Amino acid sequence: MKDYTKDFGEDVFIGHLTLFNRFILLTVSSNLHFYNKIFNLIFSHKFVDGKKEEILSLNPYNDETLVIGATDIVRIVNFYEKKKNEITFEVIQEFNESEFYGLNEKLFNGYLLVCGFDRKYCFYEPEKEEEKLSKENLFKLVNKVELVHNVYDDDCPGIVDLNNGRIFSWLNDDKNIKVLDYTPQQRIIYSKNGYGLHNAGLVSDKYLLLMGLIYPKYYTWIMDTESLEIVYKWQTPQNDSFMTALSENKFLYGSESRLACDEFSVENNQFKRKIIYEDYYCKDKKESWEDSFGVKDFLNERTFITINVRGKMMVYYCKEK
Image (cartoon, rainbow, N blue to C red; front, side):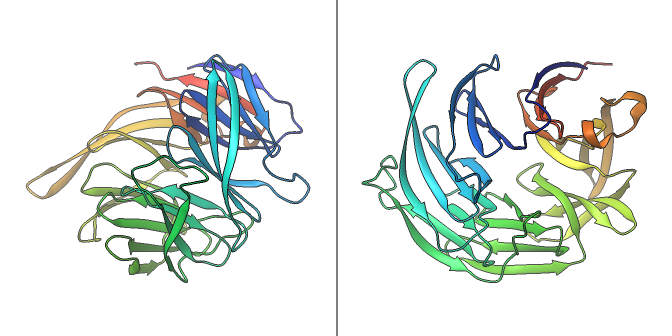
């Protein structure tokens, strides 16, 4: 692997790495930074009070709007590039009904899902769906679903939009998974304990990949998105997490030291799994806490951007073997 490293120093905390429009976004010690694709800083602003707040969730709603979830508030912010690499912004809306806003996601039908410390999943939609978000076109609350997943200081729920009007949601600390309907109505339809998931993601319209721990062993499960049944599972040798799907039933996964690609097929109702490649990016194939990181965003099948706990941003390319 090759890496192109940008060092932010050891005293900073990098909380998020997000691709937004044609920019790379980082939260660096509660500051939101915009970088271009050659890693030049072109914009920086502190959208939270660093002494009282931190950014807990950061997601694009569209090419112009970011949803910034913080300790005590959610901010809807529009960004404009009137000249190349010159960024201006406008805060168009704020929510502050709860605290520890660790989850916000845009759903398949255009809803915005927001989750805070009160365990309520709140669904919003623009007042005028056909128009851009602005101070004249804000989000309105559609409904709330109560008692879903907790938000802790160091653990927030994760979700996967199943693209069929349902959300798959999990929380590692609670070892619980749930499935919610969000259209045409909002409700919990499935709940199961005992799954300490690290990550999950769609590998096709039909199958959802789950990776996690049932102590003391690590497993991967495949869930049917319609029946919500586990249809296949295998034991994994280490603490692997799902990263991204490359094409139908072909996916990338790995740990702090390894990246691998698998593909599975279904023949006569039997699952078959094939390992396409694996690569190690830590010396001697050993994990180091200070050098550890999780993959954040892929630029293509073999190239990804990541950050580590030392405060370094890197681009890795996985070579063919």
